[in-house]
Length: 257
Ligand code: MF3
Ligand code: CO
Image (cartoon, rainbow, N blue to C red; front, side, top):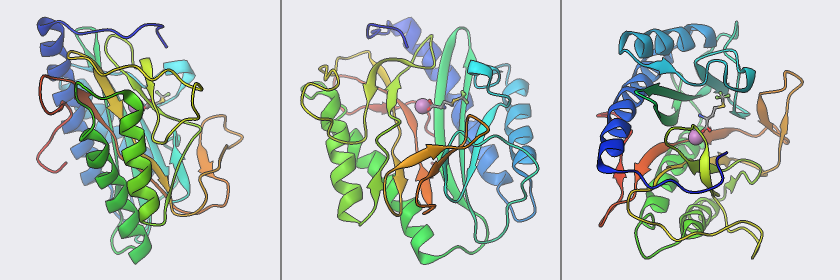
């Protein structure tokens, strides 16, 4: 993670828009591939091929040794699931997280999607996680600080009886996939994490990771897959956004967001 926050110039913002448009479209491809009988590797392949066909590069592939273009996480898997032979079935929920880069800038987004008919709890979890992003972005404006976003996310999620992950957070983004600042989905203890002011030209990822049960998570022995410690369901929703003079602009916007 680079040390200081980068403010993007108008030219850099244009490049961010371009890569984020591809990244958002790739998430839609992934969403369409979430069907009964698909393997997580097939979902990854569909997204990977789309990114390459669009002239971009799948930034997750090889990132700190990650072996695929996307993270595909099923049910109690929160983030960083490795695509493989696992077949998704009706009743499962599938989180897809992906990054792509073109002309030196990275876009990042994620979403959780149901396979066929899922439980009422799963439906509510997906919807609350997605809405938590929209609660957070209300504070992604000049005049607020980064932690105002996380407070709004946490309050919304907890008011629905769910919990937010503490061990992983959102982040700045630009030439690097992970730049300063860290963007927590909760209220950090005072003085525990820098809480910078939001400034026009910052690009950040807001990404609520929400558990149906307790927020504690653990990493599986594959070194990547993060699961809820109590094996309750988890969901993830993420967009790359731009801080402007007014409301934040969602750069990874697509029709079916
Ligand atoms: N897209 C993820 C994020 O929000 C990062 C994926 S980790 C990787 O930060 F190793 F797969 F790249
Ligand atoms: Co991210």
